[in-house]
Image (cartoon, rainbow, N blue to C red; front, top):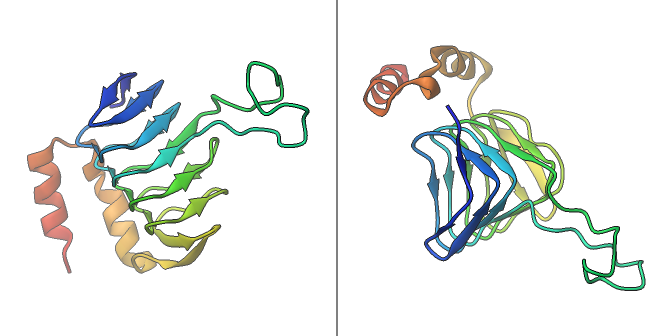
Length: 158
């Protein structure tokens, strides 16, 4: 269900990305080498998978420094919300159904069904109870077309 993208959109930059259906990416966001699941929403000014410079080497410039890290894939699950001005380190995995609060800096993997925020981001709580999350996850709505997915989600509202 992922489609490959490598283009500019709304003042942003997508490089080497695989993006699922019905994904929203806000203006001025920069996304490098990411796999993004369907129904995910990314707000404005988000940076995912940015270059990591080695400050300890004689030069920081990537043309002079062969220790610069770039291009490691970042994985973002299905139906994830990433708030404005978030920075996500390359190579991180963010689980399905997760919310990342605005202004957060994500340096480590984030489990599914969680709400995380801060600098560095920390898991603050689960988004849904274990029982409700199982119902949502087992519905597999994220592989459905929009109309069918909406019908499934509306039926899960208990």
